[in-house]
Amino acid sequence: MTHQGQTPDSAPEYVLGTNPEELQRLGFQHRLWSQAAHNLWHRAHIAPGQSILDIGSGPGFASFDLAQLVGTTGRVVGIDESAPYIAYANDQAHSRQLPHAQFFVADASKLDSLENLKPASFDIVYIRWLLCFVPDTQAVIAAVTRLLKPGGRLLVQDYFRYNSMCIAPRSDLFESIIAAIDTSWRDHGGNPDIMGVLPTIAIDAGLTIDHLARLETDTPRPGNTMWNWPDSFWRIFLPRLEDLGYITKAQHADFLTLWAALSNNPATFMHLPPMYELIARK
Image 1 (cartoon, rainbow, N blue to C red):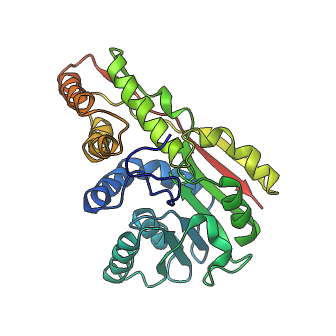
Image 2: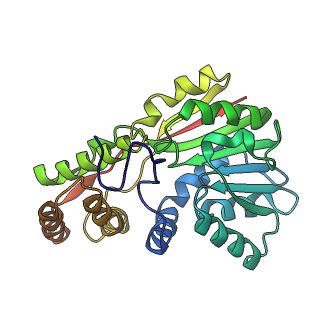
């Protein structure tokens, strides 16, 4: 079906939007999940002098950390479809004195067309929360395989069974909103269960799976830091979900009332959508 803001003839837009509010949310999100990212990078033996490609870099929050890890003898290239995010990232790289970090506007599904990306030129390709949004994951992974040096590694962190996200005490309204989010991503060409099929895609592309695991994090409860992660998401994305026609104005209002009540209930906790990580070697 076609919703407001999406037409059959138009290219799918990044469903979460690209705007200053989302930029700030992405920065907050990176802080909350930075330990998981660093643990994965440590497992992959990221070191000074390496060349790293960050696909779907957004405003560059992960890329800046990677640039510090590889040092000035290394190189970090970030690509994203959002021109404002790329402009922000390049400005930040300059102000943080990270000249070896560069950012380019690019479509992740058309990596082979980028002159700045040479075959067999990267030690590491890192992809977090991108593959769940792209329509052709096979094309992305095939291109990544060509970009990796022999022995290079693909690192991915993304969702599996996103629609399992729920709240305790259970709520039909809460779960209907999660179902609407899941549907909106799929209608825009994404797959919120991408980690369920990624190992097969990687193996078919000629990669070897070295590591596959579920990420563990604090259970969101009212008052703890992780509770603020979904809270920041509702404020940014639910108005967009309403504008796109996936939820009604009444559902939106009722959900905010429910969320306020849940946030004041010390017995409440949330089951987050499972996050998995993968390391695949060329």
